[in-house]
Image (tube, rainbow, N blue to C red; front, side, top):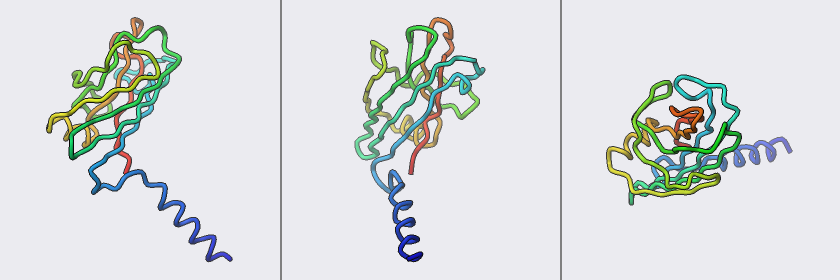
Length: 143
């Protein structure tokens, strides 16, 4: 019986992978918090971004949700290239109005795709109280 339980566990864990690294599709996710900002802030706001990038068509699609911000979002976008702990310029703005939940898509340039896949993009939501960004999260590929 232990053998069957072990096989079941191995199959269950193997099925948890989200994307094959050799696939044309790459999934990304992040959790946005004030403590991820540079410099950090004490915002109670949180958010998440889930995205899928198609390497064949260069199309990036994303879904965002957030709550608990200090006020209405005044800006929201992807920044890069920048690693964790560094700031970068806006590379892809999100459509207005900025209200949770929101979805978007865009065709990326080759350079943008390379930076995204390398983990050099972050999602950022700005408010009047935090014009440099209230919550932020580094986009991380899920393989």
